[in-house]
Image 1 (cartoon, helix red, strand yellow):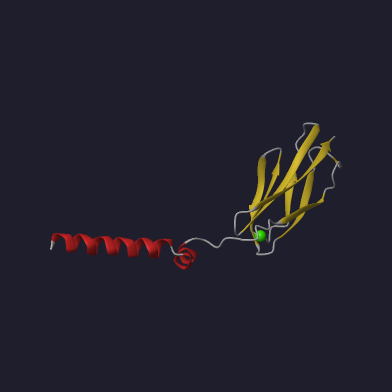
Image 2 (tube, helix red, strand yellow):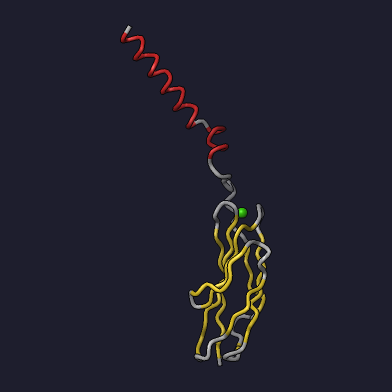
Length: 127
Ligand SMILES: [Ca+2]
């Protein structure tokens, strides 16, 4: 009797394991995976690479972000500081240019639903 119970318990465990690890069940539990692994396409359209911007002005950074399965998150950074974050509808971000002259890196990043990340980077000069 003891042995029979043990066998029954093993069988249940095995079925549970099969259930948990079967691909169809996994697909329902885990977020969708972009099997193609196609990352978003991101382009900073304004300002242009190497542009000279005036200190203490406000520059509108504009970018496009597209993806085969849809862009889920976009962010704008200048020298590592996050200026704006949003969903795919975020296509521009105002940057209050500091008074310090020099070169500044503008980065726009976009994620798709599979957490693929694409960055575009330009460098501008503040004068
Ligand atoms: Ca994608």
